[in-house]
Length: 112
Length: 114
Image (tube, rainbow over all chains, first blue to last red; front, side):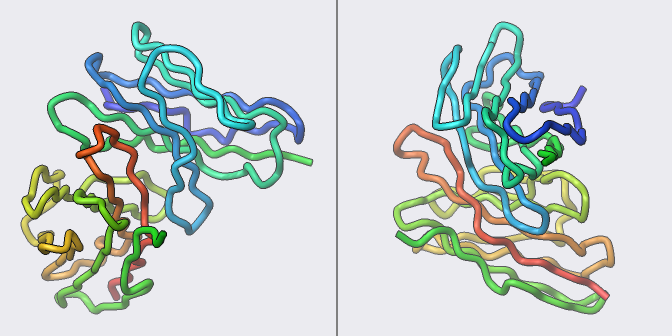
Protein backbone atom coordinates (compact mmCIF):
# COMPACT_ATOMS: atom_id res chain seq x y z
CA UNK A 1 0.00 0.00 0.00
CA UNK A 2 1.33 3.40 -0.96
CA UNK A 3 1.85 5.83 1.90
CA UNK A 4 -0.09 8.60 0.16
CA UNK A 5 -2.56 7.87 -2.62
CA UNK A 6 -4.21 10.18 -5.08
CA UNK A 7 -6.20 9.61 -8.23
CA UNK A 8 -3.93 10.67 -11.08
CA UNK A 9 -6.80 12.12 -13.11
CA UNK A 10 -7.15 14.12 -15.17
CA UNK A 11 -10.06 15.64 -13.30
CA UNK A 12 -11.95 17.88 -15.67
CA UNK A 13 -14.32 20.55 -14.34
CA UNK A 14 -15.99 23.48 -16.10
CA UNK A 15 -15.02 27.02 -15.24
CA UNK A 16 -16.92 28.24 -12.19
CA UNK A 17 -17.56 24.76 -10.80
CA UNK A 18 -16.19 23.22 -7.62
CA UNK A 19 -13.20 20.93 -8.03
CA UNK A 20 -12.81 18.21 -5.41
CA UNK A 21 -9.43 16.56 -4.99
CA UNK A 22 -8.94 13.61 -2.68
CA UNK A 23 -6.07 11.95 -0.89
CA UNK A 24 -5.76 8.98 1.45
CA UNK A 25 -2.81 8.09 3.63
CA UNK A 26 -1.74 4.89 5.27
CA UNK A 27 -0.11 5.94 8.54
CA UNK A 28 -2.81 6.63 11.11
CA UNK A 29 -0.44 8.60 13.31
CA UNK A 30 0.23 11.30 10.70
CA UNK A 31 -0.26 14.80 12.04
CA UNK A 32 0.46 17.28 9.26
CA UNK A 33 -1.13 17.48 5.83
CA UNK A 34 -0.34 19.73 2.91
CA UNK A 35 -1.59 20.56 -0.55
CA UNK A 36 0.80 21.83 -3.18
CA UNK A 37 0.03 23.07 -6.66
CA UNK A 38 2.51 22.34 -9.44
CA UNK A 39 2.33 23.82 -12.90
CA UNK A 40 4.02 21.89 -15.68
CA UNK A 41 7.78 22.31 -15.54
CA UNK A 42 7.64 24.36 -12.34
CA UNK A 43 8.27 23.60 -8.69
CA UNK A 44 5.48 22.83 -6.20
CA UNK A 45 3.82 25.76 -4.44
CA UNK A 46 2.27 25.32 -0.99
CA UNK A 47 -1.38 26.38 -1.09
CA UNK A 48 -2.90 24.84 2.04
CA UNK A 49 -1.92 23.03 5.21
CA UNK A 50 -4.14 21.47 7.86
CA UNK A 51 -3.31 19.87 11.19
CA UNK A 52 -6.71 19.35 12.86
CA UNK A 53 -9.82 17.44 11.92
CA UNK A 54 -12.41 19.48 10.10
CA UNK A 55 -12.32 22.20 7.48
CA UNK A 56 -9.90 25.02 6.86
CA UNK A 57 -10.76 27.74 4.39
CA UNK A 58 -8.49 30.18 2.58
CA UNK A 59 -10.10 32.17 -0.17
CA UNK A 60 -11.43 29.80 -2.82
CA UNK A 61 -9.63 26.84 -1.24
CA UNK A 62 -10.94 24.58 1.52
CA UNK A 63 -8.92 21.73 2.99
CA UNK A 64 -10.81 18.98 4.79
CA UNK A 65 -9.24 16.45 7.15
CA UNK A 66 -10.76 13.29 8.56
CA UNK A 67 -8.14 11.44 10.58
CA UNK A 68 -10.50 8.58 11.47
CA UNK A 69 -10.94 7.82 7.78
CA UNK A 70 -7.33 8.78 6.94
CA UNK A 71 -8.61 11.10 4.28
CA UNK A 72 -7.75 14.65 3.30
CA UNK A 73 -9.35 16.64 0.51
CA UNK A 74 -9.04 19.96 -1.24
CA UNK A 75 -12.01 21.85 -2.61
CA UNK A 76 -11.53 24.66 -5.11
CA UNK A 77 -14.58 26.87 -5.52
CA UNK A 78 -15.28 28.94 -8.62
CA UNK A 79 -12.60 27.06 -10.55
CA UNK A 80 -10.62 29.12 -13.04
CA UNK A 81 -8.55 28.03 -16.04
CA UNK A 82 -5.49 29.24 -14.10
CA UNK A 83 -6.23 26.50 -11.54
CA UNK A 84 -5.33 23.89 -14.16
CA UNK A 85 -2.29 22.17 -12.66
CA UNK A 86 -1.23 19.06 -10.79
CA UNK A 87 -2.19 19.06 -7.12
CA UNK A 88 0.08 17.17 -4.77
CA UNK A 89 -0.99 15.88 -1.40
CA UNK A 90 1.79 15.58 1.18
CA UNK A 91 1.79 13.98 4.62
CA UNK A 92 4.23 13.88 7.52
CA UNK A 93 4.16 10.31 8.85
CA UNK A 94 5.07 9.91 12.53
CA UNK A 95 8.55 8.85 13.49
CA UNK A 96 10.19 10.43 10.49
CA UNK A 97 9.97 14.00 11.77
CA UNK A 98 9.08 16.10 8.76
CA UNK A 99 10.06 13.82 5.95
CA UNK A 100 7.26 14.97 3.72
CA UNK A 101 5.83 12.10 1.70
CA UNK A 102 4.04 13.04 -1.49
CA UNK A 103 1.31 11.44 -3.48
CA UNK A 104 1.80 11.23 -7.22
CA UNK A 105 -0.63 14.10 -7.76
CA UNK A 106 -3.97 14.72 -9.44
CA UNK A 107 -4.02 16.65 -12.68
CA UNK A 108 -6.85 19.18 -12.76
CA UNK A 109 -8.15 20.63 -16.00
CA UNK A 110 -10.57 23.56 -15.83
CA UNK A 111 -12.40 23.91 -19.11
CA UNK A 112 -13.94 27.06 -20.58
CA UNK B 1 11.99 38.07 2.05
CA UNK B 2 13.87 35.85 -0.39
CA UNK B 3 12.54 32.37 -0.96
CA UNK B 4 14.45 29.16 -1.44
CA UNK B 5 17.03 29.58 -4.17
CA UNK B 6 18.66 26.82 -6.17
CA UNK B 7 21.57 26.87 -8.57
CA UNK B 8 22.15 26.25 -11.33
CA UNK B 9 18.73 26.36 -12.98
CA UNK B 10 19.83 23.96 -15.69
CA UNK B 11 22.75 21.56 -15.80
CA UNK B 12 23.88 19.30 -18.61
CA UNK B 13 26.37 16.55 -17.88
CA UNK B 14 27.63 13.48 -19.64
CA UNK B 15 27.26 9.98 -18.29
CA UNK B 16 29.86 9.15 -15.66
CA UNK B 17 30.48 12.75 -14.63
CA UNK B 18 29.64 14.31 -11.28
CA UNK B 19 27.00 16.96 -10.66
CA UNK B 20 26.78 19.42 -7.78
CA UNK B 21 23.52 21.17 -7.05
CA UNK B 22 23.14 23.96 -4.50
CA UNK B 23 20.31 25.22 -2.33
CA UNK B 24 19.94 28.25 -0.09
CA UNK B 25 16.99 28.00 2.32
CA UNK B 26 14.68 30.76 3.39
CA UNK B 27 16.40 32.94 5.97
CA UNK B 28 15.89 31.42 9.41
CA UNK B 29 15.06 27.95 8.12
CA UNK B 30 17.35 25.22 9.40
CA UNK B 31 16.00 22.18 7.57
CA UNK B 32 16.55 21.35 3.92
CA UNK B 33 14.97 18.54 1.92
CA UNK B 34 15.99 17.25 -1.48
CA UNK B 35 13.56 15.56 -3.88
CA UNK B 36 13.95 14.09 -7.33
CA UNK B 37 11.16 14.41 -9.86
CA UNK B 38 11.67 12.51 -13.08
CA UNK B 39 9.62 13.64 -16.07
CA UNK B 40 5.96 12.85 -15.58
CA UNK B 41 6.55 11.18 -12.23
CA UNK B 42 6.02 12.07 -8.59
CA UNK B 43 8.41 13.52 -6.05
CA UNK B 44 10.86 11.00 -4.65
CA UNK B 45 12.48 11.84 -1.33
CA UNK B 46 16.28 11.94 -1.49
CA UNK B 47 17.75 13.51 1.63
CA UNK B 48 16.86 15.60 4.66
CA UNK B 49 19.30 17.81 6.55
CA UNK B 50 18.57 19.61 9.77
CA UNK B 51 20.97 21.71 11.83
CA UNK B 52 23.89 20.43 9.77
CA UNK B 53 23.11 16.73 10.20
CA UNK B 54 21.66 14.18 7.80
CA UNK B 55 18.36 13.13 9.42
CA UNK B 56 16.88 10.86 6.82
CA UNK B 57 17.68 9.37 3.48
CA UNK B 58 15.48 8.00 0.73
CA UNK B 59 15.92 4.81 -1.24
CA UNK B 60 18.69 6.04 -3.52
CA UNK B 61 22.18 4.60 -4.13
CA UNK B 62 25.20 5.99 -2.23
CA UNK B 63 26.35 7.96 -5.27
CA UNK B 64 23.68 10.45 -4.22
CA UNK B 65 25.09 12.38 -1.29
CA UNK B 66 25.04 15.82 0.18
CA UNK B 67 25.80 18.05 3.06
CA UNK B 68 24.53 21.07 4.93
CA UNK B 69 26.77 23.96 5.78
CA UNK B 70 26.84 26.06 8.98
CA UNK B 71 24.75 28.74 7.26
CA UNK B 72 22.13 25.99 6.53
CA UNK B 73 22.67 26.05 2.79
CA UNK B 74 22.99 22.63 1.24
CA UNK B 75 24.66 20.81 -1.58
CA UNK B 76 23.55 17.68 -3.40
CA UNK B 77 26.21 15.65 -5.18
CA UNK B 78 25.51 12.96 -7.72
CA UNK B 79 28.49 10.87 -8.74
CA UNK B 80 28.89 8.56 -11.73
CA UNK B 81 25.89 10.06 -13.46
CA UNK B 82 23.54 7.75 -15.30
CA UNK B 83 21.02 8.64 -17.98
CA UNK B 84 18.14 7.90 -15.62
CA UNK B 85 19.39 10.59 -13.23
CA UNK B 86 17.95 13.15 -15.63
CA UNK B 87 15.24 14.88 -13.61
CA UNK B 88 14.14 18.01 -11.85
CA UNK B 89 15.88 18.23 -8.48
CA UNK B 90 13.94 20.17 -5.91
CA UNK B 91 15.06 21.63 -2.63
CA UNK B 92 12.64 22.69 0.09
CA UNK B 93 13.23 24.34 3.44
CA UNK B 94 11.37 24.64 6.71
CA UNK B 95 11.93 25.79 10.28
CA UNK B 96 11.05 22.95 12.62
CA UNK B 97 11.81 25.06 15.67
CA UNK B 98 8.48 26.84 15.23
CA UNK B 99 6.62 23.55 15.59
CA UNK B 100 5.23 23.95 12.10
CA UNK B 101 6.38 21.79 9.24
CA UNK B 102 5.30 23.68 6.14
CA UNK B 103 8.01 23.31 3.51
CA UNK B 104 8.68 25.75 0.70
CA UNK B 105 10.33 24.77 -2.56
CA UNK B 106 12.94 26.44 -4.70
CA UNK B 107 12.54 26.66 -8.46
CA UNK B 108 14.53 23.47 -8.98
CA UNK B 109 17.56 22.41 -10.97
CA UNK B 110 16.88 20.53 -14.17
CA UNK B 111 19.65 18.01 -14.66
CA UNK B 112 20.08 16.45 -18.05
CA UNK B 113 22.51 13.55 -18.47
CA UNK B 114 23.54 12.80 -22.03
